[in-house]
Image (cartoon, rainbow, N blue to C red; front, side):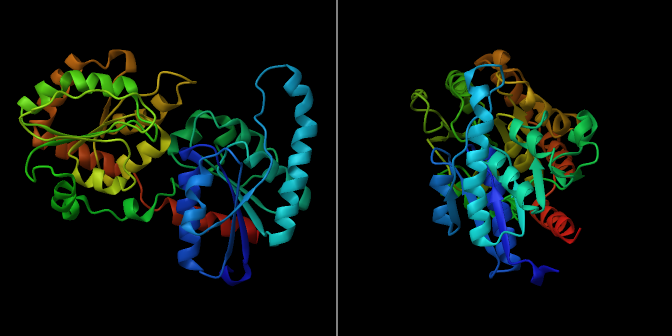
Length: 369
């Protein structure tokens, strides 16, 4: 069956939540079949422009438009815009002789689904959010081949009850990470003490200012208690000053491309609740304090809650995350290695590392049908 598949088109863009699973899946396809033609679809403004071409994949830019959520002039214009975008996308599918389209969401996925449907090309959709994103909701009108990242999605969303739970495709450096084996190397890489309890703080690709401010206020108390910190501030945030002359290491960086090193160094994470974050922390067994983004429709809380209920983390509202809360919660937690170890095991028991392989198998099933 694998030998019969020669060209796959992957559609997803805009944010890391769409692009990183797409890339991990592309890497999986390439590992199994280096001769498989893999074409990625994106838009001119999305994150995909920065990270897909350097990884060696063919990125085709197609016109895509945000779908309006209310009745306005944009809604009137939407059908014409979408069909023009679909025609442009179909030209790409024809050129590369696409045999299947796998969509990960984002506005670029809409013309890909429309073009594939008109072309009678199998469509596979991968969704990680509750509720599903607007692009994937539209795509579900054209295919029954829907995969989700987490079991709770099939329980909470009627439209997803028949979806296949495949997990989330993770980059291999994370999916294969042995934290115990890499801990000493990772801590040395950041200039951290090899034996101190370590808190890893990050707020997704853009950082999180509320987390940064709370940590700045808690830095003295944490380090006075012997807890060292690795803190990704985020490249797009205003600088937050961490007190100088702290008694143990407090390492800050704007961005970290090798997240596996952060996970390997960590005993505990303090982070947002994005779907990719929850998938990664659980898969590698890093217990986490999740601080869901206080905007949107509450999807980050829904992402983190199952991990927490499994015993692999804690939840705190963004409005309740203060320096005092961090001091009162993190210090006693990291001083209890047995509790941290139990939380780590619970997180790993909930997470899965094979999302890329499971989605690949599902894709081949869809093509065979």
